[in-house]
Length: 278
Image (cartoon, rainbow, N blue to C red; front, side):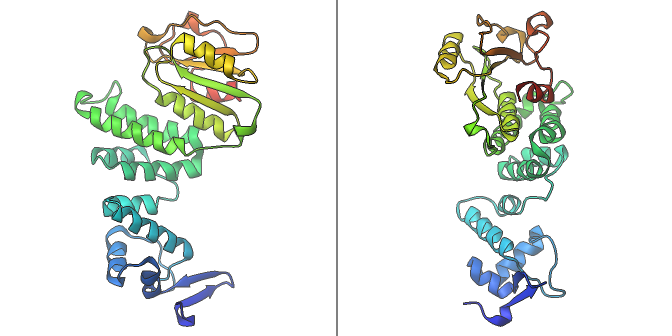
């Protein structure tokens, strides 16, 4: 039970707790709390002068950290996940975490950036540069970093899947799919999340979807989808027998399509795609 001496009201609103009270509320020894602060600087800011004070948000985050450690997550990764940076991080931080195969840290860094800057800026400023450094044309050791690229892609997907918007009740719907044989689905996951933030209901059908299945998906969607976006990463998968319908626009996206196939309204960037579809 909390005593009156353990809590202090700041400005008549915020209640904070001593280290001893916080330790009891989280269910760890005070020495553990001190160790976490010393090693991981959590909570990140001093409060209450010489003696550390903990807010209710701190207590919740510390409890989350304890639960993650109990589930087998490393203490450093648990600290990153429970106390993400206020504005996320840059590609250097994300790459460093991925090279340690620390997916929890990557997710935490991306989550922090997403919460402040949104999907488009996070993808263009953090995620895409990080992937390009390890798997792009200027990467030093593409074959040796396949595992790290997979860690990045999986962690990015986890963060993007958490993005939802108000589009679930919207009558304007968009279908997103990779062409038959195409496995690069991450760009469409980014597009789905960016559209969700704009209130557009986008349904991701996944990788390598045959044309017959796409026709059935369009037929089963009521009302008819406003657009069907087909992603092709390379020319070997840039093929389709679909044609634009009267109610559903066919949008060819990705670098695989030739210029004469794309059409004047096909987007060449994430920003263009979001503007076109929303």
